Each structure stands twice: as structure tokens, then as C-alpha cells.
Length: 226
Image (cartoon, rainbow, N blue to C red; front, side):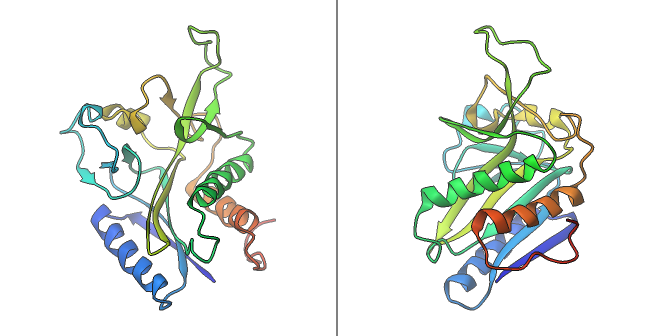
């Protein structure tokens, strides 16, 4: 069984990390069910294990938290759905690459519920969308913006940290960092793309597509719209 938790309001980053670490330890010991936690953070930056100091361009803007997840600098804040995944990767095949691919597939499937096509690009972490509404780049290519970030950590084959999907955050807040160390592409959100989606709407899509993506043998929650 996978327990789903949705937190209202803003959850402090340290509180979330403490919960995840304890839950991951309990899952590894067989003392707790797997867990997916949906929440929002107050405005903050996190530095993953590959973060480069020069990519923090405005260090005094928001609190900066060192994180043990993979990746570089990431922004979290209101209007962004943070999805923390505490899942037993061991019982799911001991395949980290496949697990990350499942997370990517999950995000893409959830975005597709709103007619948004997400893409994975070699050498660029996260999920990207092609911007047909923007001018071509200097090379003649269509510009692409990032809509979701992915960064996980494993301990005893249990994952924690996870995904952030931009629903309607203040996109200007991303300018205090070089998101994931990538300078030649921008950041977008569902609302920025013209889709009036709420966090609750996205939560429903995430629940439905999680079951499809991870092949959980559960019956769809009858309270969810079909």
C-alpha cells in the first residue's frame, strides 16, 4: 500500500526533510507503508549534491538549504506542487535508472491530462515543454522551458525527496538561481502555458497516473473524477 498525504498551507523545508528521513527509515525496516506526500514550501532555494556556488546568483533573496538529493539548485515556493516520494525501490527491482524513468513518465502522464506534452532531454534533468508561442532560437530551433524538476536520494533502497511541478509559482523567483545549472532555457508553469490548473486538479491527475505508471494493483479511488 502507498499512503498519500496532502498538506495544506506551507510546509517548512526542515520539517519535510525530518519527516522524509524518518519515514524512509521506517519503510526500510518494514514498519511503515510507502508514502507520497503532496505539499507546498515557502519561497526557498535548495542546493543538491552537484550544486555549483556560481549558480546561486542572488544568495540573499530567499533561504538556501543544502540538500542531500541529487542535482543542483532548485527553487520551491507557493504555487508549485512538491511531490515527495518515499518508495521502496528495492522491491521495485533495485533499478535506480528505471525508477527515475518511471518518475519522469509519471510527470509526463500527469501533464498530458491537461493537454500539455512533456519531454525528457538527454543531458537536461527534469521535464520540458516546447514553446510554440515563442520565437525560434538563434539556431532555428523551437525554445523549450522547464516545467518540472526531479531529484531523489536513496537510503537502504528507499527513495525520498522527489519532484516539483510548476502550477502557478512566481516565475521571477527562479531568477535567483541558474535552475539545475542550465542557462540556455527558461522556466514555465501550467498557468503560464495558458492552462487554468489548480494544485487540486494536478493532485487528481497525479493520483490517477501514479497507478498507471507504477502498475500498482489497486482499484482507482472512487472519489476521484473519471
